Image 1 (tube, helix red, strand yellow):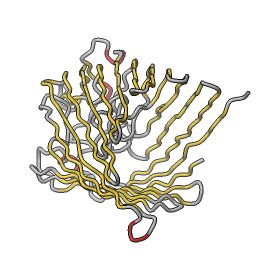
Image 2: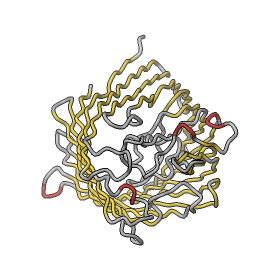
Image 3: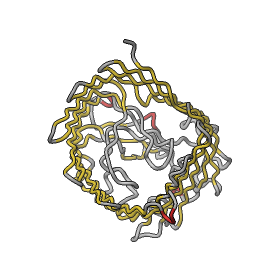
Image 4: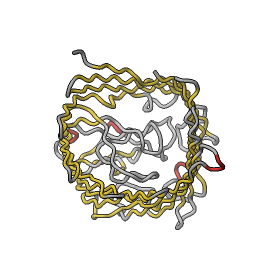
Length: 376
């Protein structure tokens, strides 16, 4: 019997318009246009599954943002109560909306966007075991992926360009160090619980000044990180929490994100749902760790789902640091057009940052983005 072949994905065109002139030397202020190709090929026969998902972006301005990656390319064997996977894959851990603390398997593709949602494919061998008392996942991760960063003519960077050609590693094996991770997950009534541990090369590099003082070089430490993600569901309430303890980047520190989402269903006698979200961020890392903009921040937002035939959805929110003046505003909206097309709108703005605060280098990088995609 022949297997099942599925071909899907999208091609898209995207433009960003920055509302202010560039702040950093070498940056450009003109609109930024991109073409995106993201096909997905899957084949399944009996207990075997193969997946291949390449990604390519051609950018009009930033040479570092024009890049190719293989998001997935793996073989999966699934038995009754266990799975084995070999190849490149993307693994997501986490429950909170505004920050994913425990999500550490894949490297962030930082030239794609600011939100950290886009990830590079990670080489791995993984085994999953299903039991009545929960799910166990074990990972061996050979082949470290370095984080991508904007180039000299790109936006979303500080005054010094990050030199990705001269990355430094704590491990003598450099990018060949084999990392390991494990996770236990299960549900207990209304509670969904995950407990994970990671040992290996950190995905968030420290940025170290080079010898001449003209560029920043990424430095990747070896860390141990233990994390937990918990979600409690009750009626229209979702309570969410993520927390980690990390050692290996200077002094051991803890970080946490927690909050809730409450949904109002079928508002005004319509099919639409409105969700109200609030989350708090704490991060106790010291100056010798990788920088973080979430040391003491509050996120609040609204999620609108029209539940119409076009799958119209909107997410609007802001993050503010009560101890500082910086605020980040975000608006995302998407809507299908016909059976195969989708339009996506994003707007992001930075306000009130003073010198020395995390978003000060980005104060001129407010932008509006529109993507038009054809799915197949």
